[in-house]
Image 1 (cartoon, rainbow, N blue to C red):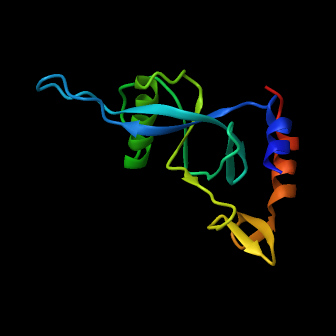
Image 2: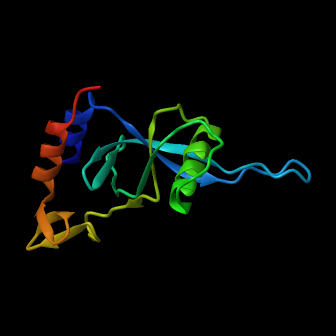
Length: 147
């Protein structure tokens, strides 16, 4: 199933999976943390599929932006701005979609948003709304624009 999905999704726009990295200090000078890309992926609703065929549960998503100085309406907005700036510091192109806090999914031992129901893998696409995984992923790929 995964190999077929990878063939279907090749022409679709990709996103990045990244992790936070704290650069080493230069003497007493501490450098700001940065996001470092670890894989490319496709967003298929609640699931991410990377170029190696691994599935992930989607986590936090941001779009890389350059750092700006301005007031923030909330602490959450300030934190998101810090993540966007960390993406730029990590060399991620402005405007790229970046996924953080993703969790690798094991289809042999499913955990949310996946479950095994009578031998059929299902995905929770909305609260308490489960659908079979393969048709769900195929539909999400069909709905994606080409890159």
